[in-house]
Image (tube, rainbow, N blue to C red):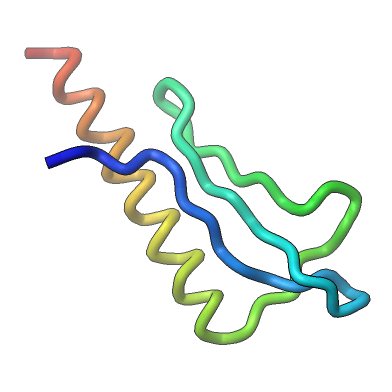
Length: 70
């Protein structure tokens, strides 16, 4: 099974334009990239997607740490 290491979550900026939050794994860290110079406005469903992406990224980081030891 391939490990997914990048997630995109739809959002809008303050002006209502479509934007994206990105979550990815870099080495042993979880990185959250917001729209440049903007605030991200999330609908309740998108908050759930962000939460799931962050959880999956942490699991990916933890898994890669386990693989380094073995």
